[in-house]
Length: 193
Image 1: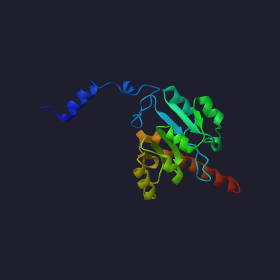
Image 2: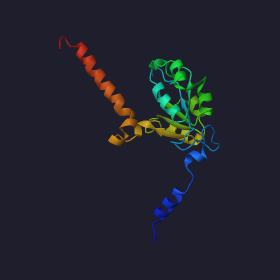
Image 3: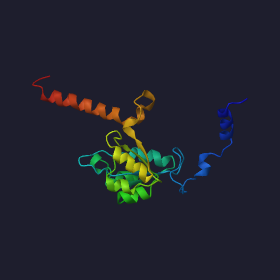
Image 4: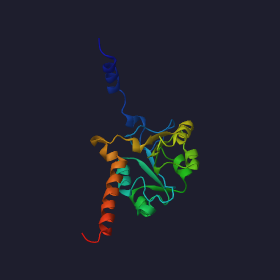
C-alpha cells in the first residue's frame, strides 16, 4: 500500500507547469499568481510614516524582477528619501503610478516597509498580497482589519532568523547597521581614540 503522499507526488509530476497556467502578460482573475511564476505584478509603495526614509525595493532588485518576467510598478516618489529618484526606477524597468490606491488596484503583490495606514489598508483587496513590517502582536486590530478585507499579508519581522532565511531577514540587516552607527557615534564623542 502506497502512502497518500506518494500518490500526490505522482499526480503533481503530471500537472502542467505553473507558467502554462499564468503566461507572462496575462492577469489572473482569481487573485495573485503563485510566487515564482512569471508575470506577477509587484507594487512598491511610498512610505507614509513620518521620518521613514527607506524604500521596500530598490532599483537593482527591480532590474532582477523585470529580468525574470515580472512587471513592477512604483508609487511616484517611493525611493526619493532613500536616494533613489523615480528616474532610477523607470530606467530599471518599473512603471510609475500616482497613488497607493492605483498601485494596490493594479498590483498582485504590494511591498511596503511600515504597516499601511487605515486609508491604504482600505485600498487593499483579496487580490493583493502585502509584504510589510506589520507588528501583528502590537497591532491586533490592524491585522483583523487586513484579514476582514481579504488581503493576504506577510509580516516580515516574523521571518525566522536562521541562516537559510538570512537573505530575507529584515531585522538582522537593520540591527547590523544600527550597531555600526552606534559605534561610530560613540567613537566621535570620545576625547581621543
